[in-house]
Length: 178
Image 1 (cartoon, helix red, strand yellow):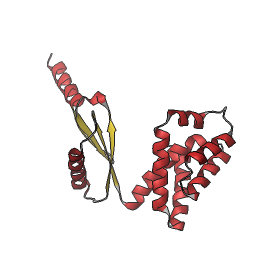
Image 2 (cartoon, helix red, strand yellow; image 1 turned 90 degrees about the vertical axis):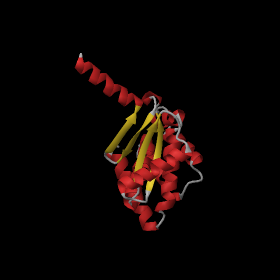
Image 3 (cartoon, one colour; image 1 turned 30 degrees about the vertical axis):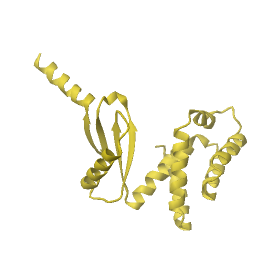
Image 4 (cartoon, one colour; image 1 turned 30 degrees about the horizontal axis):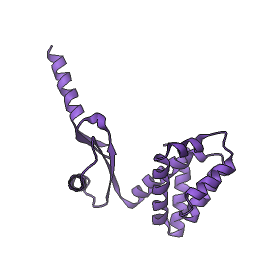
């Protein structure tokens, strides 16, 4: 993450803590992050030097019209400071800082296909067991390149049980013996 995005995120988290609205803002920032992540067009608009700042501001305020006043203030501030490309990063940084503040452990599981509900529950149970925390959020990513199995990341711990990794291990072992 960029240091500027983290600074903005810390500032709005502090403001939200003062107003006791951090949970509301957490929902806003998740929505902002996933909306920007899911839209190449919106990312292009935010990055574009051709589109006027005021047009970006109007578009963002319309897109995020259902969000809180602090979110609207953040958008206005980023536009005024010519930092609109940072909006997604600020939202992501806020989510990470909020989870850290609340003691929530975030686990990322990467699979070749979407997780079934049953498998998601098993992964959550395993993460709770590994971290010793009941506050766990599971972020699911899909990467067909891993072929099958899964990769689980919790903080700086990674467990790779993917087929691609196993094939790579077999290939290395085979190469050594030749």
